[in-house]
Length: 132
Image (cartoon, rainbow, N blue to C red):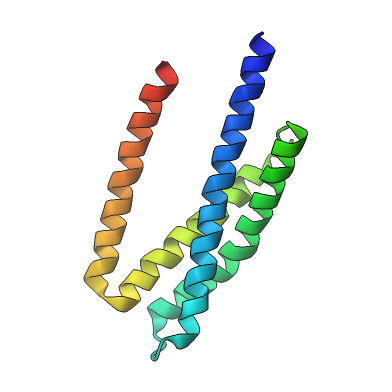
């Protein structure tokens, strides 16, 4: 019985991870598609573009490997995968911050502050869910 519960937790975590990676991939692809239509290229837009250039293949790989894990009901036995997957998510976040800074500097700070607040709030709520 405990084995089934653990398997259920693993599958739920894999599905949550796939949703997170898919969202990051979608955001990166969508904003990269809009960047060529920008009239001016500045440092913020260039950094954003390079971040998305890292993010797209890394998060696509993460979606693929996580989907394989769901299909095979197994977790990838790799110490590098969490680090690489986190780097892809981080590149997406940094790309968005610099994209907001490109549009309006204050908007970048607002996005950064709101993201930090949301992360802290989510981590606190996550702990309360795991206690139950």
